[in-house]
Length: 113
Image (tube, rainbow, N blue to C red; front, side, top):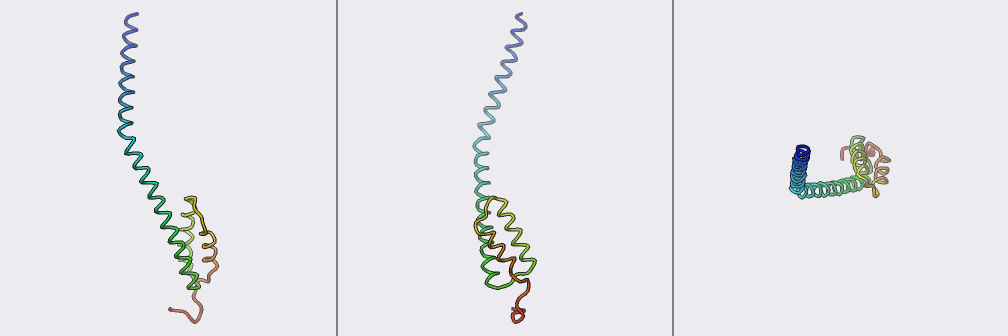
């Protein structure tokens, strides 16, 4: 009977030591992990702001120009997809439609300009 109690005590001591070690490891990694997560969230926010600026600038430039090549349209579509996938949309959907509606070649009198 005493042998069983000694084994239980040994197991309890081992478990207590493991729990203490895990708690200590958690406390060491908790703050750096929170900082990494916060930094990643800020970078995502910064990227979304830059993407919005690109979309807005592309819309302004191409609608003012009056035409947009197929390759440029594809680039804008890819940026819009990325932007929308992050849960953002604002006016970018209407911007996308405006750009898609543009001709892909410049008007005849404006070639090469």
